[in-house]
Structures are given as C-alpha cells and as structure tokens.
Image 1: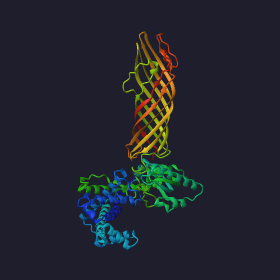
Image 2: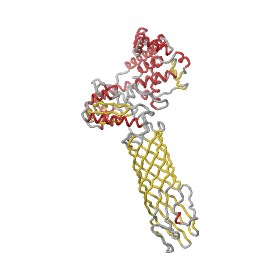
Image 3: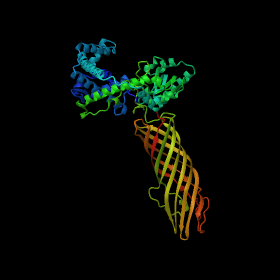
Length: 598
C-alpha cells in the first residue's frame, strides 16, 4: 500500500495541538495527568485527547470510540508526530538553527487572528477566553512556544533533507522492473463522484435508506439529470462537490484498493455505485487508460529516487529517537515505524494524492490506507448487501433416544454413550441486506452405533444422512467485533449408509436401511471476527434439529432364514413402524468468510 511522506503531518498536528490545548482551562492544566514525555517536553492526557478529537473534526469525521483500531491509529499518529517534532526541534538547537522572536511573533499573530475569525466579534472572542479560564496572554504564550518548536523542527528536517544525496539516478532497467511487478497499479482512470455519507455508528436501517437515496439519484442521472448539478446539491465529498464532483485522473495505486476495484469495474462512460466505509459513491467514469510504461516511466523514476531520500530521513529520525528519553503512560515507548502512523487527510475515504510535476498524480501519492471500515463505524461486522459469504462447520449431537424404538418391545432401552454423532456442513449465503442472508448448505450427519437388548435378541444400528437445505440468517451486531445470529434451515433429507444388525440365538441378520423426508433446524449462535478487515469469523451455536426418517425401506444383506423383514420396517408383533431419528440438540462450531464484504 502506498504511503505519503512520513513527516507530512507535523505542521498540521502542531497547529491543532495548540488549538486543542487552548480549549482547556488553565486550572485543568495544572492537575491534568502527564501521559507522554519526550526528553524535557511533555503532553498531558487532556492535550492528547483534545488533539485526537481535533484530528477527527478536521477530517469532518465523527470521532472514533476509544479502544477501537481507528481511534488507536489516530492516537499513534498524534503521539508519533509530537515525538518527531520535539526531537527535531532539539536537533535544531544542537546544530545551531535559530528562529528569531520577530518571526515567531508574526506567526503567532497570524494564528490568533485566524482563531478570532471563528467568532462573530472581538467581544465574543474575549468572552470565549474568559469562559475557558485563560487570558489572551496565556493563549499567545501557548501558541508561541508550540510554533517556535514547530518552526525549528521544520528547518531541521529541511536542512537534513538538503544534506542527503539526491540519490543515485534510477536506470530505465530498474524502472521497468518496478513497473513489471505490478503494472496494474499504473492503470489510470478519470472520474467524478457524488458521496452520500453514512455517519459513524449508523444503524443498518439508516444505511439501507442512504443506499436507496443513492440508487434513486443514480436513476435520475441516468434518466437525463445533470451529474454536476446533482454533485453540487447532494455530494458530501467536500473536496470535489464544488467542482461538480470531478476528482480528476488517478493511477489505480493512488486509490484505496477496495474502492479502486469498484471504480475500475465500471465501464468507460458508465456510472455505478461503489460502497465505501464512509458511505455510497455514485461514480461516473469519464476515461480509462491501460498501463503504459512509456507514459509513467518518469513518474516511476522520480518516485524511486524520492523513496531513497525518504529512507535516509527515516534512518536519521530513528537515530534521534534511539538516544531520546520517551515514555507513554509511565512506560518506555517503543512506538512503531512512522510509516504506520495515520496521515493527515486520511479518513477522506477515496484518495489523498500528490500531483506530479506534469500535473498527473504521482505513483507515490498518499492513500487512505484504512481499507475496511474502522471498527465502530457502520457495524463493520455486517456484510454489504449483494455480497456472498462462504462457510463451513462441525457439530456434535445430543440425540433423542427414539431411533428404532418402535421396532423393539416397549420396555427395551437404547444403550448409547456420548458422543452420539457428528455433522459436517459447508454452505454459501447471499446477503440480501447487511442483516439478512439466505443461502444453500449441505450437511453430512453421522449417527454412531447404538444397541438395544430385546429379550434374547440384541439389535444394533447406525446411520448417516445427507441433508441439502435452504437456509436463512438474521445478523444482529452486538459490538464492533461480534454478531449474534439467529438461523433457520430446511430441506429434503436422505438416509444413507444405515444398517440394522439383529443377533438372535439362532443367527445374525444384517439389513441395510434407507429413507428420505423433510427436515430442518433452528438455532442461534455468536460469531467473532479475528482479522482487522472483518473478512473472516469463527462462531459457536446451539440449535435443535427435527429430522425423523420414517417408512424405512430395507434390504436384507445376511439372513439365516429364520427372520423376515418388511418394507417399510415394522415391528412384526405390534405392527408399529420403525423410526430412525436424527432429532435433538446440537452444539456446533463454524468458520465463515466474507470475500465480497468490501
């Protein structure tokens, strides 16, 4: 997955960090717990939380819940950016990079003036400061110290960048080799969008309504309505709505991979709807172009050369980090590679591309790397309507004891110990909508041997059944990784490989049994998602199966001539019809895969 420059977020974070800290009353700062320490600098828990929330606000996103992967990713972004800024500012002091007071004062005035514009009047601004318990001098001092650190860090990074070699020129052979590894990355598409956004935590019913709205607008556009006008009217993709939805031309590698799959599936000059974590995109594909090395060679060479420089900056920063004292929540901070940090601009969902010198997007443009919907948004455990789900499982039986009971004397007791039997199941479901699925499944059921002493006789039997069925499932999300499932299935079942052996004082008879009939089961279970993309789950459930096989047809395999068997099998003395019964309570385990969920 493509990444942007790992130092890109610093300026953005510093500014929002200043605003966030200024939102805290001065008294609160005195008692707020320190959570992050970088050498002589510190960030309080309140400042960290405010910076995280400010990040989501800046992206026009509802804040993620603490503990969810996307929240933790945003937290990591803020922490890593603060660490980088502090360490590079210290490096600036070490190598003698100076920042004049006049320059810092000028930037401080600009920031304060920008904040004042968010208030109706100067009086309202002063009232806001009073309400937060801080003075204008407090505000300026806080912003000034942060800006000074930010400017130092920026200059240290710039000086280090200039000191790095421009990189060995990338040869045509190297560029061709890079292109050959994934030529599809350099396919291009020019498109426009209308985004119908789905707020975080929306219920499935709301998601369905948004889907219907998008489908309705698409139908009107296909009927002759103006796409650009509708984009300005309906689209919530702020970066393109004012331009009539036009996004421009992008390489496949610059789009979120899952969104790229949907966009490139739409034919040139065609339109369609692409499901995304942030909502539904109506996409109009204006032009497509296949990968052509001659057209992208320069971009590839520039990208590879720039990558070498960024690797040098990365090694430089890791060296600064290695010699620093850093703790998070009182523990030594190990952190992770900066490339794993959340980027400024991430969360817009589709692209965050950097244009190249020729105006085209660069192959290394920053990309939204969330992939799947963040946990906590849009019930990420639920599949999109129209997708397929594949699964398989195994279950153990706790049977009733009626099998062949009517064949024996009334006082005869079936003797069978656990386990009674097992079942194997494979199937495919189709999501009619995120919460309701219908499908086909095939089960193989095996009943282990049971015996019945019947006077001087002793009978034993076992049986297997094949059960193709229609199924339905109702999914109810319990939290961000778990679904509760209520399921039903039914179909025409076949008794196969059944046998009855009767031992008498005069000999032994063996009879093959066969039958068919309707059966089904109903039950409930819970599935848990273990992968971050929510594409696979394991589940546990309990159900009750109703599957009696009556009218048993028989075929005598061995007969010593002393007994006869009728078809269907009945008790010769009482005339009661025999029964092989797979009914009972089952406990099962299953695995399910959601390849079409994205």
